[in-house]
Length: 302
Image (cartoon, rainbow, N blue to C red; front, side, top):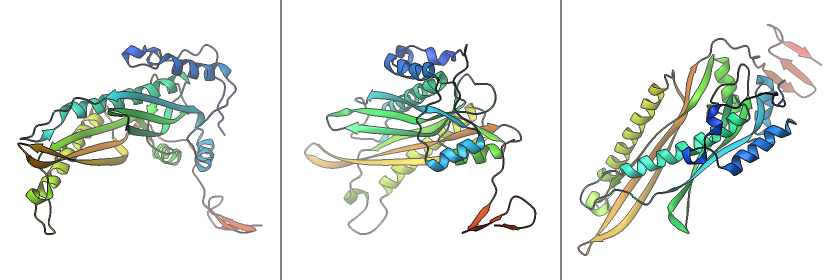
C-alpha cells in the first residue's frame, strides 16, 4: 500500500513551479508554505479525501502529498451591454475564463512543487462579496497525489474522486487536464409581460438566452478537448447562474436577464493496460461472509 514518502534528494521541481507572481505564478507566501512542507519530508499530509477515498487511494497506490490550492481575486468592472440589443458579454466571459485559469495554474504549481502526478477532486468556486460588488474570488482546491512512473512536468488536474480515478485507470485511461467552456449572455428586454403574458406559457427570450449561452459554452468546451488531443472528457458538470436587473430608459421600466453557463470536466487519454488490483465483492453476513473474488465458486468462511 502506498504511503507518502519523503521527496528524494536532488529533486528539481518543474520550471512551471518557479514562475514569478507577475507572470501568473504563486505568491511568495504560498511558495514558502509549500517549500516548508517539502523540506520537512516527514510524510505528513492534509487532504480533501473522505475516509473511504483514503482507503481506495491506499489500494490503488495513490499516495496523498497534501492539499493544494490556487486563487485569484478579479475585478469584473467592465461588462459590455446595450439597452437596445443583447448578446454575449464578451469582456465578462473572457475575464472569468482568465481568472479560473489563473487559479487552476497556481494550484498546479503547488502540486508540481510537491512532485505530484495528479491533483484529485478539484473544486472550482467563484465567490462575490457585498463589500466589493465588482470583485470576485476564484478558488481551486484539491489533493495532490503521487502515482507510478516518472513525475510529469505538469501534474494532471481532474475533478474526479479517488474512486473515479481508480476506475478510470482500470479502464486503461488517465486524466490530462481540467477543461472548461463558459459564456455570459445578456438580454436587455426580458420582463415577463413583454416576453410572454400573464398566463402560463414559455418565455421565449429567457429560453433563447439560456440556449445561446449553453451553445457557446459547449463549443468552447469541445474545442479545449480537441486542443489537448484527448479521447474525450468525463465527469462533466454544468453550472448555470441567472440574474435579473430592473432599469429605466426614458422613464420607461425594463427588466434585463443574464445567463452564465459553465461546463467543467476532465479530459482523458489512453494509458494502456492497468496493473492495479481489481476490487473483490464481499457480502457481509455478520460473523460469516461470502468472498466472491477469491475463487470461481462461492466459498463461505467462518
